[in-house]
Amino acid sequence: MSMTVAGTISDFDESAFRASLASQIDGVSPDDILLEVAAASVAVTATIIPTSNTTADSVLSTLSAFDASTLSAALNVTVESLDPPVSSMQVFGPATPPPYPPPLLSHTNHSFLASMVIVLRSLRHS
Image 1 (cartoon, rainbow, N blue to C red):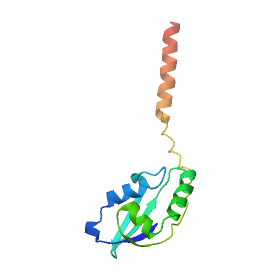
Image 2: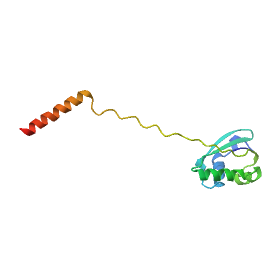
Image 3: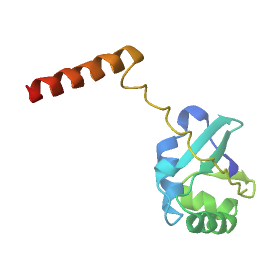
Image 4: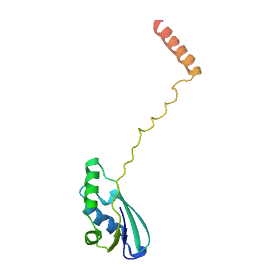
């Protein structure tokens, strides 16, 4: 979601903005929101990372209902312009499996182990 709010970057309170935006969307916390802020008054791009598909649908529905006036009131900033929200999905493949552990015994250890077993068996039979 992109918007331009009145003010300057130095006056813009990102933490308060994220908290206000999260309070408007069920199932979203301030930690779920990433902000990109640039000069232009203050150009704000809020990326919301919902925790489930159900929440994602709710986020898009809730954000689509805002206009500049209602979002200004909800966020306690003056929203000068507002782009419609855009939904995108990223699919991540399965994690790469961990590498195989190194062999426990090298070739030289095999003969040593076999020799120990033979010696121990010989000692038991005596």
